[in-house]
Image (cartoon, rainbow, N blue to C red):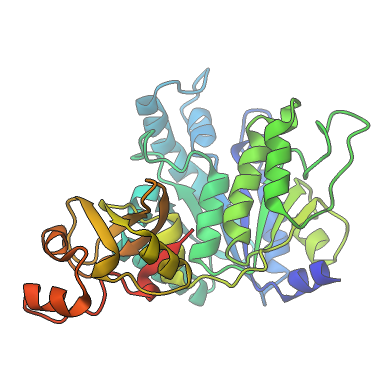
Length: 367
């Protein structure tokens, strides 16, 4: 019954729609978008956020190209045309049902910056406050291979965390998690998953198509969401998609959220998106204290690597060279090198100011 409780209580829902789902005979499936809009309008008490791929597909159609773009530059140019066309489709269809849509284009590079992350969060919340359905996509027109999310499954997971969603729904051509390739008549749908790690390991070890990319990326994305107490559903593309979910029909695979304590917004950003500017090596005593939930003091620091300023993120490394966490430092690398290994009182005398800790426990994530 716990599954039903999660679904019934879900108010803010992120729906991820991939290019394959939107594709119908090498064109945008407007019938599917219409059915989606019809269903969203039927649940005015709920808040929906759509993470939609399809910019490149729409661009190929709009430009009447004979093949998909191959280089990153071609992809960016085609996506630039396609994103406008795709939003035009969403706007027209949703407006006919008295629904307003708003566009948000994101990159992982943008969300790695704490201020921009908070701006994105505030914008998303304000759109929902205005009764707008946000349509989110990766900013393919400026993204490059090194900084792209890689798959909108991950984008949807980060958006779910950013938005404090109650449920993340991934619409999949596979329709759910199966014991084998769904084309195998003996393959069985796995209706519920309690341990997403076990499912990921199963996908990685599978020799079928099930284990080669598509479903694996969905499970990896599901791990991000479920680790933040957000349940995930992987469901088939159907005309009654949303109705089926909230009517508690048997549809797709339900992945339970983690039972661990939910991270704060800042710690979530630290764990998932922050980019370390340097490294702080700690001794065994400090490592033990950090794992017990304490702050990092100067005395536990053995070495300082990299160039960073106050309020920058650093990786925390143990004596074996293993990264054990990340944190936001109070002081820069030059000052930290002067006080590493010193007791707090001695460190304060050296710097001529009070140093309570190098990283406060509220600004610390230990893996």
